[in-house]
Length: 329
Image (tube, rainbow, N blue to C red; front, side, top):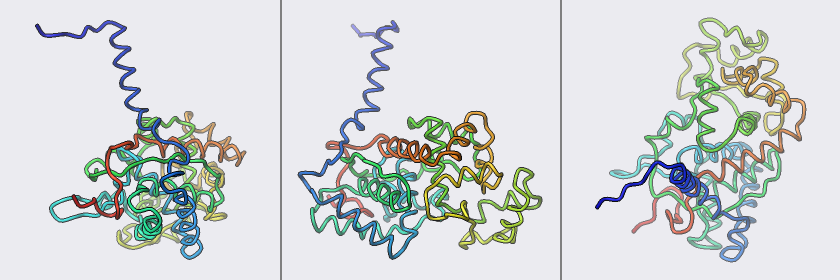
């Protein structure tokens, strides 16, 4: 006789509990100092490499923060972002239009090589993505964050899902909030994460729709004139690197100037303007603009939430020898 499951409240509650356990299981298997026995120098090596790269190429630090976002928003914090396209195999997530402007991937391999020399096939690329972002945030004047490790690397790319999971430059604040909510990040933390735009920039191809043929009425007029000087044509070359920075005062410091700017209607994207005016987000924007310490506290919390999104742990996935490619069988 077939067994059926009733829809009683107790059974429904049990199923919900199972779903929650599945969602949090990966998080619970992450831990601070995961490599304390298997590779005790791992975090120091990563920090040293991140610092050396920052001293030579300051924009690498910004890249590490963006890498964390792009990796963790797509299914899992599992370094799927780093995989290169392979003939008759993997198609890289980096081929997606959402990855436009991303760079410095070659230096991830520099960090990985240094770690591999100390501890072969021990430290995951996913943890290198997370820890390099943590160390970069500190170098960029942001908060010091104690981050858990123990992530493992994906054995596949999720290129087909990228555009459905990573917000686009012209998406509404409602869609952005829903994308973050889907991975367990609340409104306050979402507002804080967007503060990473303090060290970001927007390419002209992604902002000219606010300037041409007519200027967006919500833009500060003086700032609009500045942006038109930075982006003088309505049809910029999509392969060019013409851009404008979000923060003209402290462009390489993670601080609350981003919020001060958008309250003055100097945001580069439509979502920046919406963030400052939407009743769900505006109070947090105001508080962060008023208090940099509060912003850093919430930014730390948000980064931890993001970095612990659905990680592969235990015997899931693999530890890649080269972050660009899956291990040979």
